[in-house]
Amino acid sequence: LAPPLAPPPAAAERTIGHVVSALRGFFRSITLGAHLEQSLQDLLRLLTLWFRYGGDARVDAALSDGFALVHVDTWLLVIPQIIARINAPQPRVRKAVQNLLLTVGRLHPQALIYPLAVASHESRPRREAERSTAASPRPDGRQAAAATSLPLFSMGRISHAEATLTMMRAHCDTLVEQALLVSNELIRVAILWPEQWHESLEQAYRRYFEQPHAGEPRGIESTLAVLAPLYARLEAGASTAHEADFVAAYAADLRSALAHCHEFRLSGDEAQLQAAWTRFYEVLRQLGRQLQQARTLQLRDVSPRLLKATNLEIAVPGTYRANAPVVAIRSFAPAIRVMSSKQRPRKL
Image (cartoon, rainbow, N blue to C red; front, side, top):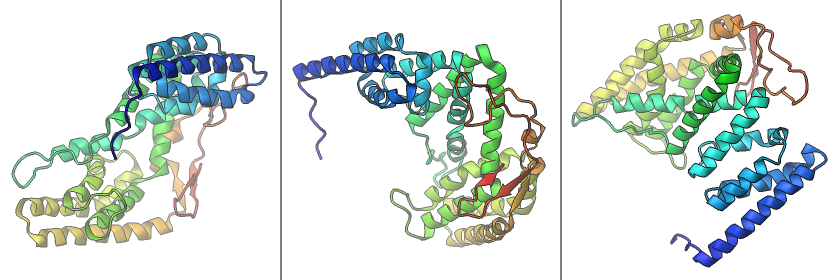
């Protein structure tokens, strides 16, 4: 299909005029609202206009005027939607988002700290994959292009989330440190190395031998791209007892399989690929049995840093409410129950 035609200049001018008038009306409605919850619909409509037309200077000016009128607490209702646009392609929108987050963060750092910490953590495995894949030799002797290159918008989200956290350190450095600790360790506990490898090996198998899901590439390069971030983590070394056990049990087979894959890429010898998948499949089979048996995890094995974290200033995730006492984390229970469902959620 041909791309939609741009509206003529006169129509675009009229549209911007309507948008500015609508924004002023929404801001007025929000400031007159008796209860914050009643303003949610207006806030969401305002965000739609902001993120769509905020690149225009007149719209940006109207937004700046409106932000000065609305109480900071109002934005707590839509923090997830605002953080989701921290990587907006338009510079004016991106700057306005960061400025608003910093304004909210000065009064309510607890409301922002977890979402920003998680956003800063996202796609880190893909960046590892870029480095790992780029370092892999191709049969022609050149360095391989990063098959899992990270989309620019994701990289933007990471960098701007990290930049916002860095600026928040000026007034809540302890909270930022604790949020990064808790969020990173909870992510570690949520999906451990055996689960990551089991899921990725299944995906790699599907990409090479079976019909992949819609949009998934096929072939040895895409297969190795799935495993690249896990190999990067494996080579970086274990940081917990649970990860050390994984290395002792499976690292030799996984490294041998990777070596066979590299030999196949260099020589094209199908026997090398067969040998690689023999080892991959054996690891996959053993991991499947191991995961079925796991029902309880000990925090000392999977996240000793969480076990040592006591009397924190940061709130229990999901409990922060404006103008209410902070329910802070005193400690973490030493045992984690793995619930018996497909996604294997934890109860901590």
